[in-house]
Length: 375
Ligand code: UDP
Image 1: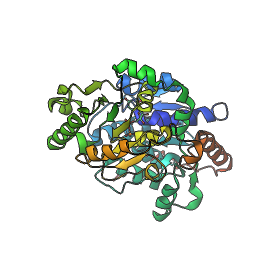
Image 2 (image 1 turned 45 degrees about the vertical axis):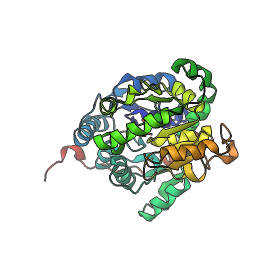
Image 3 (image 1 turned 90 degrees about the vertical axis):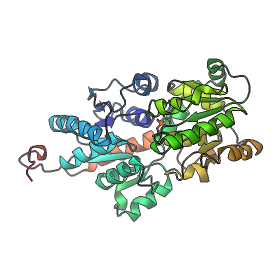
Image 4 (image 1 turned 120 degrees about the vertical axis):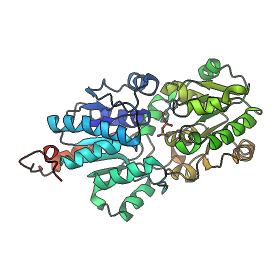
C-alpha cells in the first residue's frame, strides 16, 4: 500500500508503482494533504499514476491537525486492509502519519528517500524524516551521505538500501516533454530569464523575511525577468508585500510537471527553497541558488549545480554564476550523482519484492493494537 499526499510525493511514487505493476497487488492511498488540483490532480494524469484507490481528503490545517486527520483516516484503512507493507515517500506530514499508524499496527514500512538530513530542526520536514526513519523497516536511500546518517543513528545496515533517486527516473522519462520554447511562448519571454519557487516557512511566513525576499526579487528582475509559479503557501504575504509591482516579475499559478520543468530547462538560473528543484536543476544542468542556510541534499552541491545563498546574497551569487562557464544541459549521465540514472524505481521494486519473499510473517496480537488505547 503506497501512501502519497502532496506534490513532491508524486514524481517519487510514479516510478515505484510502475516498476511493481503486475508483480504485486498494489493499493494507492492519497491522503489529500494537498487537495488543490494544481498541486495534486494534474500530477496523477501527467505522470501516469493510477487513480487513487482511496482518497482520504484530509486537507490542510495546523501540523497537529493535519497529521492527526491523516492518522485517523489511515488507521481505519490499515486496520481494514492489513497491507503486507506500507510504502511512504519523502518528508511530508502524511509520510510521518502513515509511518506512526503502521508501526503501531505492526505493519512494516518502506521509506523512499530515507536518510536525508538538514540537521535543522526548525524545518518540519526534518522532524518527519527522523521519526519516519526510526520506525521504518526498509530504508531506500537516494544518495550515499544518507547511508552514513542512518548508520550513525543506529539503523541496522541490513535495512538500508542505496537504490538511487526515483524522482530523477520521472525526470529522465519525461525529458523530451520539457519544451523550453513552449515555456517561453507561454510566459511571453524572449531573452534570458530566471525561475523562482518559494514556499518554505522561513522565507514566506515572517513579514520582515518576505519584505527582504521581495526587495531582492525586484532587484534581480531589473536585470532579467523572473517567472514565479507561486505556491499557495505564502502567496498572500508575498503579494501584500508588492511582489507583482515590478514589471520584470511574472507571477503565475503552480504549473503542471512538464510545463514547470520546460520553464526550468530554459532558465539562466533557478532561485529556490524547494528540495526537489535542487535535484532537478542538478540533472538539467541549470545553475541553482538555494535560499536556505542548509540543504539535506548536499550531493546537489558536490555533484551538481546547487549553491546555498542568503536572500541578500542572491544578486552577487547570480553575477558569479552567470559569469562562469555554463554547465552542460542536461548534465551527462557520468556527471550526475551516483544512481541518479533513471533506474531507481526498478531497484526499489527489487528490494521490495525480495523483502516480501523472504519476510517472516508477523504474529498479530489477539486484539488489533488500534483498539487497545488505554493509558
Ligand atoms: N513542481 C511543479 N510545478 C511547479 C513547481 C514545482 O510541477 O510549479 C514540481 C517539481 O517537480 C518539484 C516538485 O513539484 O520538484 C515538488 O516541489 P515543492 O517545491 O512543492 O516540494 P519540495 O521538493 O520542496 O518538498
